[in-house]
Length: 326
Length: 298
Image (tube, rainbow over the protein chains, first blue to last red):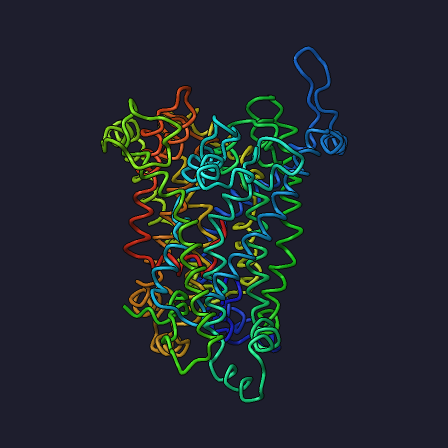
């Protein structure tokens, strides 16, 4: 299965032998001696994750509530929840949130669409399937920064005689009407920023769906056909319902990547671009250009909150089956 | 190598069967190949632009012929890009190799415990680890850079690549743990470990004698995954390093954002900076995909 839906607990709880109701101190010692080495194995990682993930998150949250005065005594951040209300009330932050919304909706819809379409084209087998799969997946092997450098050129806003990149290509193909200012202007400009992201991630979603299709036994298709199901009904009622856990994983993966997306935007739009600003890039600007680490901490905390709202229910959902074992 | 449970194997295609087919099915099949070829061409289009531009001479470079193949093929851009990026490529290699080896080892230990030798509370800790994989790194970046600056006060050598190695090890733990834990859960029979425990093996010796010898496939997947993500990282590099001690992504971005862009050099630079991961993808594609499938969340 994909992502977190591992079949780990099918194996049974080895290290938990002797978890009974009887309470006997000697037994307890035996039990502790049994599991304590396991705990020691993981301890270095627990310490590292404890400090670098949870400690730092806590630190960042504390920093976000700080009251800050400039050297001249002017209050720069009022402290407490007012730090939050002043960032949320800031039109610049609202603009970044709007951009994030447009980016995420386009990015998620685009990757899911192409990922599923490509998987459908390949799932019954095709000649040169391995080649097609490798070609469609290859952008995943390239860094966002490297891809961003190319896409910055491809998405140049100039049109007409000055056009370069995609606009120029459209003209050469007689599709001049498709020319666009891409991410550089317009209320929905971030939909254009989603294009390179869709280019990079669709192959990945294809691979997830393809594994899903291949995991469904051929018998089920045969059975549906024997029952007289049309191809459409076969997909609609037999195959697609079984892919919904994969679709959910794909949704969470792409969605949370979109919320964190930094490299690609920074690399395409340049540092501190206002038009292409999302909370993740604004945070960098607040740190290094506006010299306002408190606002950056507030922004980062809110970003974490947005991601957590999507991810925590998912983590609980995918691990629910395992809880049942305990 | 027993790669029985590598997720990528599940992509293995069924045999292509061309049974007696109706006209409709034949039409669908043709349409399918037309679509596949079109999509492949579209996906490759940026790669085409990269390649043709990288082999042009800066002197000949003209935006109006950007999409055409070079009038004069030249490696001038490649040489210029290599000269600019070579030191950063070296730093990135050191960083990605060390970081991926250490986090793979930690991941293997953790994965073994979480799959086969649990302790009270281990499930909760595992889920807490997993959450570390999803967090936006912005949420830890301010305290992290503060800590690095503090360390540098006492140990000035701890800057640039060493800081990034530490970050990639720590923030790589969740995904490495997940890959190994899923691998062990499906390909190490619990009975073998129990039998070895009955024979007196400790947690450690069961790991080294039973679990480790069958781990190579998971190590390959994890090493590739970690190498690729460390190599491709930009966020940590931007916050914690500078152009003189940073990795290749930093160098590439600096190269590409100068005034008067030298496009052949920039595009060759993109390829130089992507070559190691592209080579891994081409040579070890199956394992690369397996990493993606087992929880690629970055």
